[in-house]
Image 1: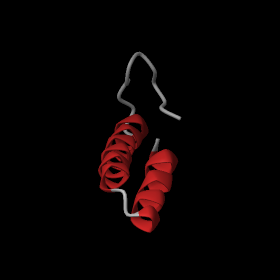
Image 2 (image 1 turned 45 degrees about the vertical axis):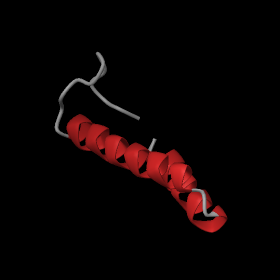
Image 3 (image 1 turned 60 degrees about the vertical axis):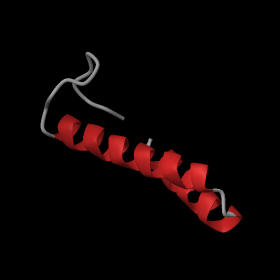
Length: 51
């Protein structure tokens, strides 16, 4: 999710499409949150690890 968010951020920046920029920021933030929670051992959606 973080990688997809970064790709959308880059495409949005290069193409000047603000909706891709916004969606990219949201995906990076959610992906980072899932990554931190998974690293701390909290189950997310019934999974112990989030990949």
